[in-house]
Image (cartoon, rainbow, N blue to C red; front, top):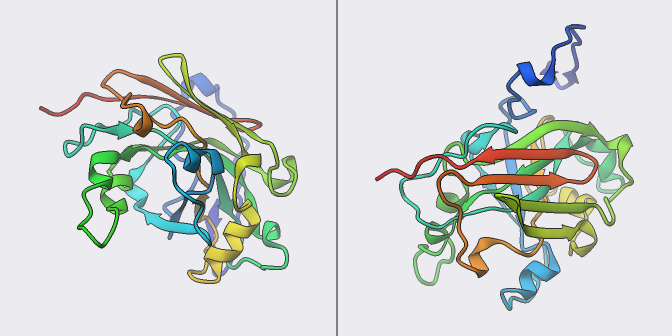
Length: 244
């Protein structure tokens, strides 16, 4: 996808290659905003004894955090508690979102793994809260892909879409989008009313229960992490070496 003045266009080359012969980059251009919605799955909140917020919670993630579907997950030197979060990711295909029909502004969906440094997340100053920037924007940690599936392939709102994540073949997360507090459309409208979306922006929509934070089973060097979203595909990323 390429951008023109106020619009996005697709240019097809007709070139065909085997999937095994290419490296899949994150399936978006360098975008203006990578937005992450938090605290959006009810069972995920229950496992930590947290009440659902009264309205959506969202924050920005640095673009430099993104990696492709088979790229290694960089182990940041500032953490020893590297966690995983499989997520459905919405890809915006318009310059603004119409609150009456937010899905009309979507290009489609992809899968994400919102890898997080939990010790950095807890390090926010007392009385101010979590340090989500340090936790969520570490360079080369967040899987995105393997491709975008256009919105016509999915029913509006993605009811009951299954998400799962394994580490070295062991199931860690297994949930569905039916557990969302706010739908994709509601999140899009809420965020666009505050910070307008641009074509090519992406929205991570939350993660189901089962993250390592509750068990202490954090990611280790060499772990194979597979995050799957039904109807889209699987991100398979290997955790890199931990700096001394």
